[in-house]
Every structure is written in C-alpha cells, then in structure tokens.
Length: 178
Image 1 (tube, rainbow, N blue to C red):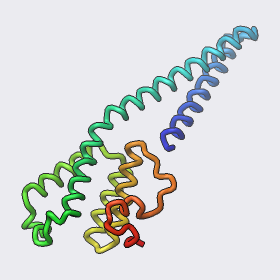
Image 2 (image 1 turned 90 degrees about the vertical axis):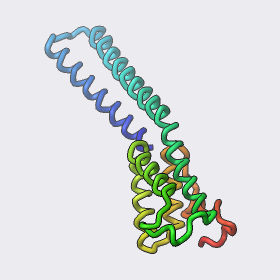
Image 3 (image 1 turned 180 degrees about the vertical axis):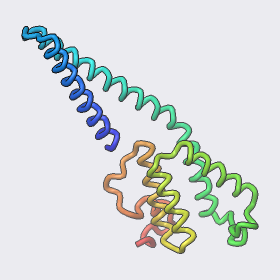
Image 4 (image 1 turned 120 degrees about the vertical axis):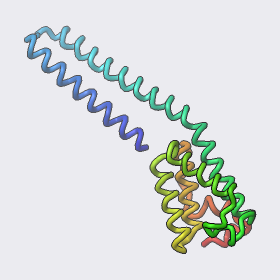
C-alpha cells in the first residue's frame, strides 16, 4: 500500500514536471500550432509513463531478488522460536554468561540478517519483542506482531487478522490466549 502511494506521488511529480517543461518550451518557442502542442504533450505523458513503468519494474525486481535472503533470515527466526517452544533451551542457559554457542551464533546470524534484509516494520517489531521479553510484557502478542511484520514484508496480507491470531496457530490450546 505504501509502495503504491509512493508510486502515485512519483507519477504525479513526473507529470507536473512534464507539464512544466512543456509550458516552458512552448512559451520559449512561442509555438501556437495546436498539433505541435498535442504531439509534445503526448510525448511528455508517454515518457513519464515509460519512466514510471521502468521504476516500478526495477523496484519489483529488487524486491524479488531480496526475497530469498529475507526468507532465509526469517527461517532462522522461526527455527529459534521452534527451539524455544520445544523447550530445547533451559532457563539456566538463558542467563547471558551461560548461553550455548549455538544460541549465540543463531542470534548473531538473525541480527545480521535483520539488519541487512528486513523491512523497517520487521526491525521495529523485533526491537519491540526484545523490549517486551526483557520487561515482562506480553511476549506472545509481541511475537504475533513480529509474525505480522514478516508476513507483510514478504508481501502477504494481514487483513482480517486480529491481535494474537498468528500466535494461536502454534499454541496447544488456541483459546488460551485471550
């Protein structure tokens, strides 16, 4: 949605720029022939449309090329979540001086990947999750926001999902989160 708005704004700016150039050139050359003005107007709009299409195509290509890297990083995140859900990590190991090397390595890989590939909304959700997990807030709802941000970053819609819907999928009793 945000990309569409940016695209529309860019198109409007290009059209205004084209109209300004058209006005400047016609007044500069003092062209009064309507066929020349119509041809020039058509050329300006055609070029503006072409530039917009190329910009949009390039943006889409870049997003598609980044998708594989994003999926890999998000896979690390989901693997960590699954290990915590399966209780492979004990409370004693979670104390910073006792962290196992594999856990340190996974978190380092996750943080590096998020910095490089994640969207701003995913980074914000991750920072919020970390804050909530250390301050005693509702970790499950913070995790749900992280899931939603990841889905959005990968191009999926979250329309119609309520707070906690995604986290309920992994719970033994989905009704326990209310």
